[in-house]
Length: 211
Ligand SMILES: [Zn+2]
Picture 1 (cartoon, rainbow, N blue to C red):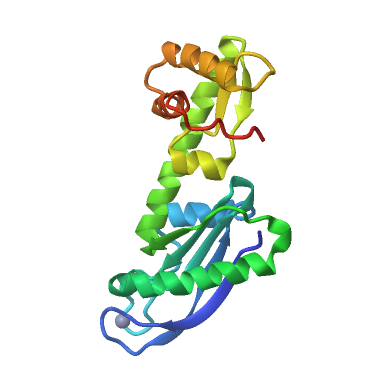
Picture 2 (tube, rainbow, N blue to C red):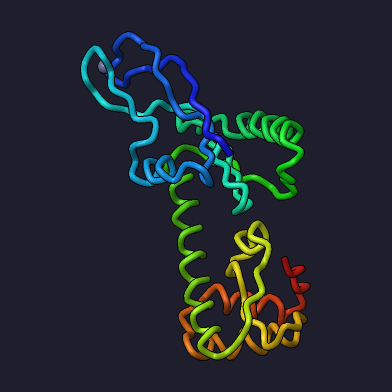
């Protein structure tokens, strides 16, 4: 997804004269790793007041989109915190438009509606945590001769599961998935996402379709 820049009035917190400044309105995270890094580093949409020289965030609506990861977030300016319900209604309408305009993207998952860049950063930190733990699971699974079954990312992230789970054989069913997952977890009990997966599936949550 291509990132999109926009422009609008920026209001310096020092009370100076508002000025026009560019900002990133859509971050296509799959194509713009540098923008994602700028966001994580706290440099995204940072502008400088021409009058007093102060740096501040150009607090605007941002869309964060990573189609291969099935990750979509609508971020409202931090200033809109009080009216978040109203703002969310507007963001839902934006989501509907985006979906209609990008039919090829197959956006069949729910977006996140967030308040400010801090919440977006927290979401990305959690995403990195899932990815890291999924890699650990993959490494242990390979050591024990298991195969990996990728789970739907949009589902795994919301359920608190890893992005892939070990399976005993090429067969993917509740029994083989649970057996392999338990054996891998026994090697490293710190894999909390895998433990959550085992707990949920054992308790009767249907096994998600393999992708
Ligand atoms: Zn200023």
